[in-house]
Amino acid sequence: MATTTTTFAPISNKLRRMMPRFFQYLVLTVVMIVIFVPLVILIFGSLKTTGMMYSHPYTFPNPPHWDNITYILGTDVFWRMLQNSIFVMLGTTAGVVFVCGLAAFVFARMDFRGKNWLFNLFNMGLMFPINVAILPVYFVLRQMNDMGIHMIDTLLGVIMVQLAFQISGNVVILRGFFTAIPAELQDAAYIDGCNAFDFFWRILLPLARPALSAVGALTMIVSWNDLLVPLVILNNDKLWTLPLGTMQFQGQYGSDLALISAFVLLSSIPTIIFYMFAERQIVSGLTAGALKG
Image 1 (spheres, one colour):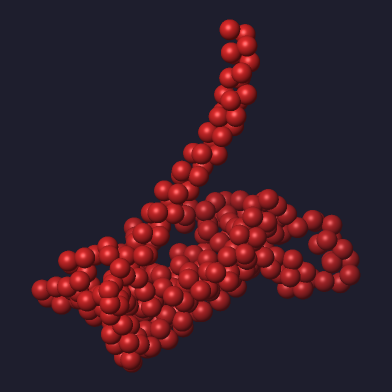
Image 2 (tube, rainbow, N blue to C red; image 1 turned 180 degrees about the vertical axis):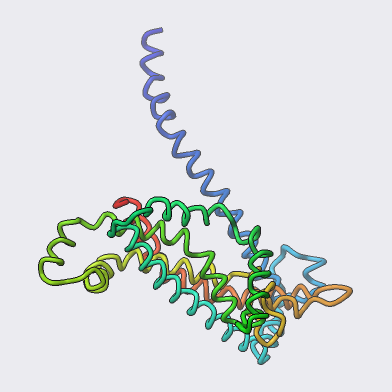
């Protein structure tokens, strides 16, 4: 009996060590399937007719139907929506980086009465998602319209609303990074004649470039994929962004699923390409901010 126990002991220990790794790979495989199966169906659907999608939704398109993609690329509507999406994305990203950078610097490096209370007020913005607050925001914008400040049915209104809902989380990210900068560095800058803004502009921002890059990249992706804010604010179809473009393929009695799939695929290509190049910045920026915070 002692010999049998000794023989099976290394095997049981080896299985015990392999089980956590097995479950890790199992979970990763399930997550990968959940993510990539809809993407594969979308790609296949964009190369089919609507009838083929209803009859054979999961099969490879044989032969591929390229007319959907060429039709969308040949319309002026797609390129106008692309231009609108780029304008909104760049405007929102620039505003978020500028406003959140200044706010995070104030909360991280300056002392004033009520700072913690005001920072907690910023954090409360994380408790109200845009889906809940969009109706009162629309009422505020409509009142501003009545006062002569036109925000409804303008791309500027979309940028301002997206900016407002991106501030809270990004201020928290940048504040953790700014707080980790050694205080001795700020004292040395003040001794050399720098004021608070000089320290922020010349020293803090270059050191915080990874965190700023991560915030900017995440904001670009969220702004590009946003559907709710443009849907509520924009009435003129000439101002529509790409997420709203799928509505032009929906009729009273049905939808052209093949064209919708092709349109969604073409709309997502810029974000996929951008994320492939910005992934390292996002991961390094958030990881550095988390470790230093």
